[in-house]
Length: 497
Image 1 (tube, rainbow, N blue to C red):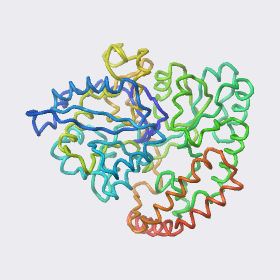
Image 2 (spheres, rainbow, N blue to C red):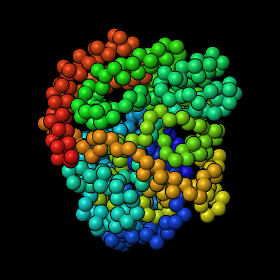
Image 3 (spheres, helix red, strand yellow):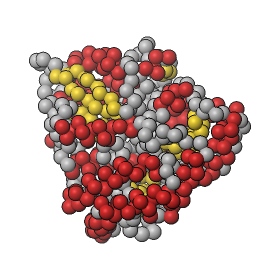
């Protein structure tokens, strides 16, 4: 991406891995636009089709202006115009559940392991199966995207979305506002664990009372070395592969210790009082009034974040680089099962993932307004980019993007090396089918909405609220869900030895 613009998060953003997940950006310089027109099999005759695209991210002031320019281009190429609707990070999953359930008109929508859960919504029938559409209108996608993404995002052998082409492993990092690190000569060399952050947080709390030492929103979850079967639901397996036992993550010693530390930080004032309810920390990154947060990274992500925020951002690893279902499914564009224009939607996705002109416009806005080219590969953001600061990882094939000012020409080679060095999770490729426990899953989700964010951000005392949460999850049927997941995982493991 040309700017990271958001955690990664997811993707990380989320992206955010492909990490698949999370956010990647740049420009490939090697992909030619000849594929841009491919996939326009339905022709350009007749009245243009308007495609409605729901995506994740803080709504941007200039999104309609940019989409007007995008629509001029796509109308010429595939006789379609684009209406983008953005929903903020912390609100995306919940609002999309309501919109999809109500039959709100939409054609394309962002989904991921952590944002409007991809696999679970495939199971619910929210997305169109894409196998035939890919064959007919998506050959450019199949020829361009790393095949590992298309194969890794299959559910029961079928594709239901187009993953972003970016980094594969999921690597968590602590991000630092380097201006504050330099100002107070903070030593970040020994940072790795959650507990190791305390001296830095304490210094900033004392020296800069207007700064939020530890920035987070309501989606924050402390890192523990487990792989979740369903993102941020309390069912997980140890990453070290020592066993394949599905556990309630809230009952693990690692998560209990992390929640105690988070509450300690919250009481000390290191975490914002509204962390458990805030949907975004973009106000902090825009103003620079934060010391650190956690994000998912990729090669050269520091350049992306620094270019986007307008001040230096540095990082330290908070985990190993692991290839998980979350990372493989970290950024996906699906076609709604209720789309009135599925063929045209696939034509657009094919164009977006093969045409550098379109991909860079969607990512960085209007040339000369939001950014300017430095040379044939590199760009820099202009002041107006703050009005169109998009999460690149969520918007398609990142390897078509222009490089940022400080990016080396071998950026994509670094991505390949990063991807090759990722370690697979022991449950990579396992997708839990919750059909048999659908009632319990709904009840568990309701309990999660009640307890999760306040526990994870340290807002409440785990000594009191963790036992309550565990008890309520059990009453909701979590043990039954875990037993079903264990049965499926055992069968999968036996079949995939």
